[in-house]
Every structure is written in structure tokens, then in C-alpha cells.
Length: 154
View 1 (cartoon, rainbow, N blue to C red):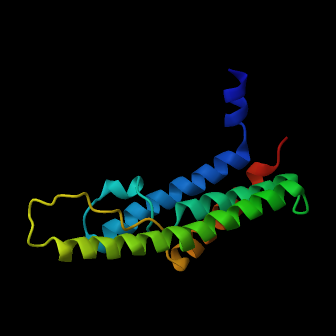
View 2 (cartoon, rainbow, N blue to C red):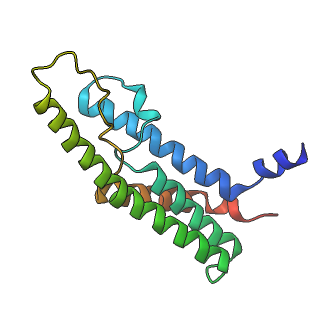
View 3 (spheres, rainbow, N blue to C red):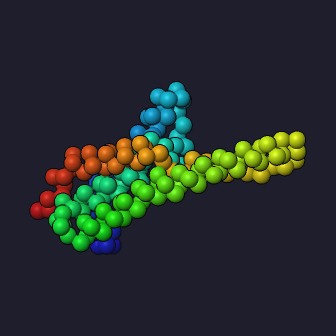
């Protein structure tokens, strides 16, 4: 049971998770402003503005740097991890989403006269635009900066 207490005392982890949750909540607000209707599904879907993954890993890397030192191998590891996650979000997953959109369009065109063909559509919103990743990263840094006093363990 002490292990759970130790996890809950990990301020770096908690601040990173808060950054992620705030990013997800912002997606809901942005969706509400954009489409004038509440769509709670954005809370559990990938993609959208801002990138929650980017907010999470950026706040995590900054927290590790603040806690263990900016020259520590731990900070280097967290930073490389953050770069890979953000590259994947804006690169690989964005490309997969574009491919899904094209495949869905091809299926629509090829089978528009065959109503009995009922295949599930591919998920198109998988990744993020570079702007969404940058916004998520900026949010992560902001949350870290606002919470940096939490990293001073007494």
C-alpha cells in the first residue's frame, strides 16, 4: 500500500498528469466554442487542439529537469522521450490519419452503388498538426512553470 502512496507523492508525475488533463479539458472548451455543442467524446479521443500528449511529456521533462537537474541523464532521457512522442503525434500519426481519410474516400467512391457493403470507416483523426503539438508543448511548459514550486521537496 505504501507504493501507491509513493506514486501519489510524485509531484513530477502529478503535475504532468494535470497538464494532460487540462489539455483534454481545453479540447472540450474549444470544441464547444467551435461547434456550439457539447461533445464529451473529445475527452477520450486522439487528435485535436491542443495535444495532450505533448503537454504531458513536456511538463514531465521540465519537472525532471527541475527536480534532478538540467544536466542529469534523467532529464536527457525525458527530453528525448518527449521529442519522440511529439514527432510521432505530428508525423507518423498525422500521416496515418491522412491515409485513413483517402482510404475512406476511395471506399465511398468504389462502393457507393453497393449499399450492402457495410465496412466500418477508418478513424481519420489520429494525430496532430504541428501547431497543435506546439500548443500542447507550450501548455505543458506553462503548467510546469505555474507548478514549479511543487518540485521543491521539503
